[in-house]
Length: 263
Image 1 (cartoon, rainbow, N blue to C red):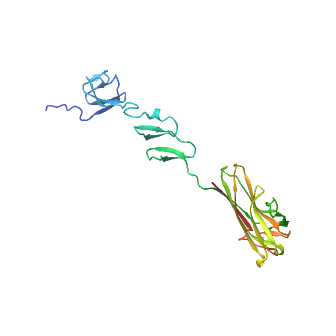
Image 2: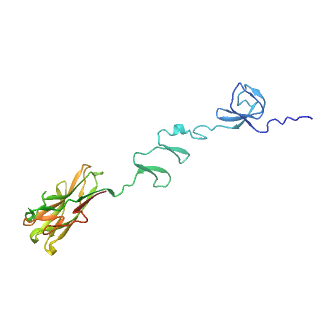
Image 3: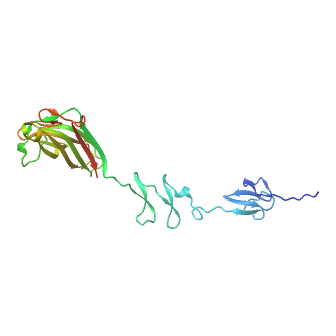
C-alpha cells in the first residue's frame, strides 16, 4: 500500500534557535524575543532568513510598543499607573502617607494620612485613700492660684505634637472642715489650669469635678496633678473623703484623672 507523508500535523516547538540543529518544516523557534516557523528544511540559516523562516510573533520595542519596567521603576515601592498618554511611574511616597485620588479625580497621588482629633489618652487613679491640705486660701483673692496643696492623683504625658492641647478631667469626693469653703485644682507643670471651690455645709459633703485644658508648645513630657489646695481659713480640705473622716471611694477609687491629647 502506498504511503502518504502528511508531514507535521502540529507545530513543533524547538526552543531557542541553534545553528547546529537541523530544522524541518513546521519547527518553531525563538530568536531575539520573536518566534519563527520553519518553511524549508535548514541547518545554520538563522531567522529572520525569509528563505527558511516565517515570523509568527514579534517582540515589542521597549518603551514604545511596550513599557520597560526595569528602567521605569527605579525605586523600591514605585507603582506603574496609566498616565495621560500611557503607562508611567508613580514614585513611592514618604513615611505615613496614603495613596488617594487627586482633587481633579484624574490621577493617583500620595498625601498625608488624615489625623484624628484624639492623639492619646492617659489616665490615673488614687486607690490609697484621702488626700488633705490645710493651706489658707483667703489670700488668693484677685490673684492667681500658686503652686500649693497636696497631689491626690498624678500622671505624666508626653505629647506627640507640639501644637496640640491637653484636655483634662478630674473627679473625686470632697469634704471641707468646719463647714468652710475648700479649694481643689488641676496643675500642669506646677501651674494651676483649673480649680473648683467646694464646701461641707450641705450634708457635710461635696464632690470635686474639674475640666480644663493646657496648650502644648513642645513634645517634652508634662506632669498633670489633681490637688487638694486648701481651705479659706486654713481648715482641712480633703479629696477622697467627706467630712468627719468618712473616706469615700468609687468602688475602691478615691479619685481619677483623665488627660487627653487632642489636635
